[in-house]
Image (cartoon, rainbow, N blue to C red):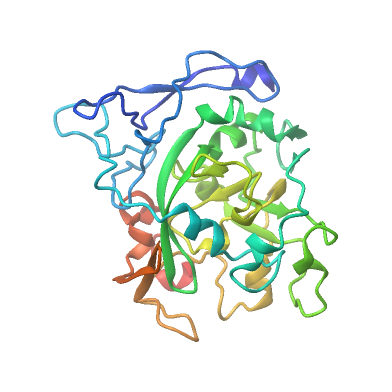
Length: 338
């Protein structure tokens, strides 16, 4: 397995080296279970790798093409002055993580006992190189050297944020364990620790713990799907799903599984927690379709939360604005992919 991933791969996400210039491609290198490869530029908050809603990704391309310049193969850099982020305080104090409770403030208030380390993730099912790996091995490099991607986040409850995520493409991890050709789906199982996660121990919770979410294999290896180890350059935030979550920006937020301890490759479609709980309200795919209402509210608009009490009502966009990159995954009626 180590030899399989011991290769530096080109990454087309842009890095700022000067406010007035374009950055060239950077090597996203790393290994699972091996010593680190060199050549990483430090991540800086003045210069972000940015995957914006609406940026073009060609079907079948190796990586997202972000802000592609018309006369160059390098990527145009998002100007931090024009890419507004939700304030970190808002994004870390207003969360859904029912493992800690049902109120939006519970994940921040009630996660103090949660142990972020040690942390290991087991890969199993239909893959040729199953195993259990520490989270640092999965990162493959120091946390400060991971990519930062700015994604629009859309909750099924019709609120949204703009958040910088730190991580690497999920496909890097998936390719390392070599899924079999019969693997059609990927299931993500979250940790079960009712002594540290009071929501799991609550007699009022109707969810069947541990939490399980799932994607098709095509969704899981899509260039935008992100193995996330931190947000805002901070990896010590259990309320945001750390130490490992996935981020799938074109779907409602509950599809981006948190606290992951197991990744399983299957031939049959796995059950997913919210879909199992209330299938009429939470579809298995749960792509963002503004024209398909939730049974209890419209999805046509969303409340964009910026922080410091600033909330803006904006129109929702198909696939959360990433339609150009992902719509080809869902031919036919949208209803069958809700």
